[in-house]
Amino acid sequence: MSSIARTIAVFCGSRLGNDPVYQDVAQQAGKLLAREAIRLVYGGGANGLMGVVADSVIRAGGEVTGVIPEFLTKREKMHECVSELIVTTSMHERKQIMFARAEAFWILPGGFGTFDEMMEILTWRQLERHNKPIILVNTAGWGEAVVAMLEAAVKQGFASEQSRALLQVVPDVETALACSVWQEQGAPVPMDTL
Image 1 (cartoon, one colour):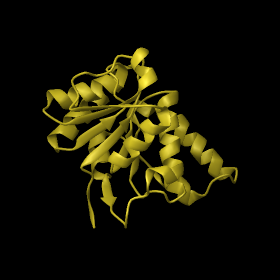
Image 2 (cartoon, helix red, strand yellow):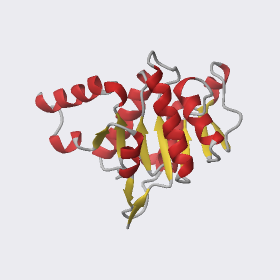
Image 3 (cartoon, rainbow, N blue to C red):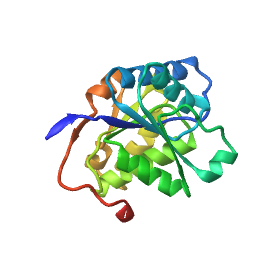
Image 4 (cartoon, rainbow, N blue to C red):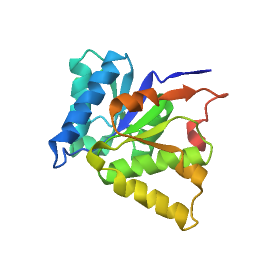
């Protein structure tokens, strides 16, 4: 059975970035998720693009689950207006919860943390730990260097074309939504086996 994901994890920057178009796409993502009654699962912060996408969902009447490790609550501002806030003991537990809750993953502009989350979820899919869509929204070409790195790994013999194809690259969030079709196959993988 396949259907549009009802919960989507969005990985994006805890900073705003240098181009206002990054904030625009985060706002568009939030509005679209709320319009389609899709719950946002994200990193729980109130700053940067993370805060922008969460604020946008909330303003549009949507549901938001924030997941943040306890140590980050002392370094970053938690979003206090989300529908559900989960405080974890570690970064790994945070990623496991976001993985378990989401039926698809959107990668919006971001930095090292965004790259880390994308690569881990992509690796889990390559290892057949899930079959959920992973979609990079290539706003203003921000993701081209990441895609080039993945394609270089294929060219150099470190990854297969099939593995590279597990990451879909799209130009905007409307296309990301169309690609967020989840095919449920069997029982979910237990989090402790990831």
